[in-house]
Image (cartoon, rainbow, N blue to C red; front, side, top):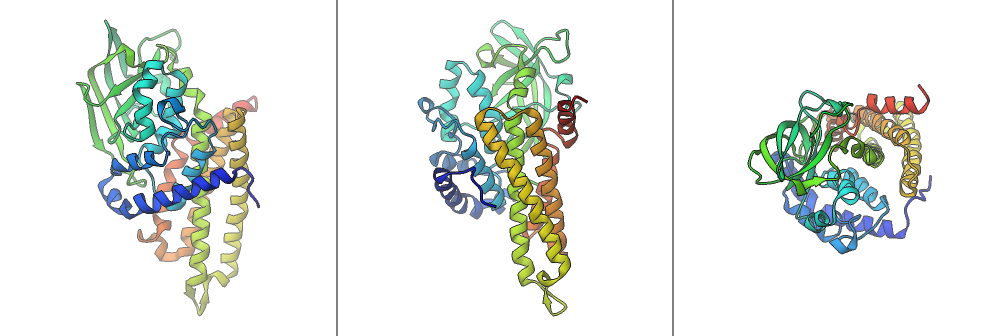
Length: 381
């Protein structure tokens, strides 16, 4: 079916992104995969074509684009190329909105120009070893002492935590009457005494995307590094969830589409029993089922993109898109790997890497179970 969500400007930008990935990312991706992280210079090159500054206002060096659809173009092309840009996508789709919404003018002048150019890349540290999705139960604390907060605690599964130049840490600054009260956002910069990176975690998939353990031991964070108001972080963390979950859905949807395209080409060439496996009825039916489900996912994502730009996308509807598209991604890639036979289990074939990379999408940005809880609440349950 014809897509109407993008216009000529989006498609022109898509070609720029494709050229960038072919020139500056794909030739190096195997080396980055082995190293467990991308080379930070790729962030600077991405800055040269405007990727990290898409939604940053012009006065701070960005393009000042309010629409999320250009971000969606980047997400789709990353998925179709089978690559990641480490923590850069997390910054543009997840972290940046916190700065745009809650940063003071001084903070904007201090950090946004570097973010727009790709010379500052940030991360956000929420998850702790003992809490998982239970943000209200976090144990990391920050005690006000004069003009500083003294930060203590540990975080894990932090996307971009090795390469980042700063990290927004969610910490408890006050106990409060409700366990969700008293959380604050503190910007911790590289070089602050007591801030340590642990190991770059070895993962099932997304091998080139650095994922770190972080620790904070009596880190003195200046009061001017408080993002937003003290004690309001729990509410802040919810405001960008629709965009965060939609970005995950977009990536998953494009990944499923790519898997189908790769597999259609493969079954046209691969022969068994004297004919191509694409001529078998089972192959036709399996790929036809994939194509039908993908079309439904595409309609959901495109509608959600329109609603996000209009400001009407609800948390429940974003959760629906996230659940449907990530589960679709897993189903489609599993079917496509099966049609590759033994070759599908070999890492030299893209479908094998896609299979490993896909598994985490049902976990991050809110697990499938968390998202279903949100949807059920919208039904009055």
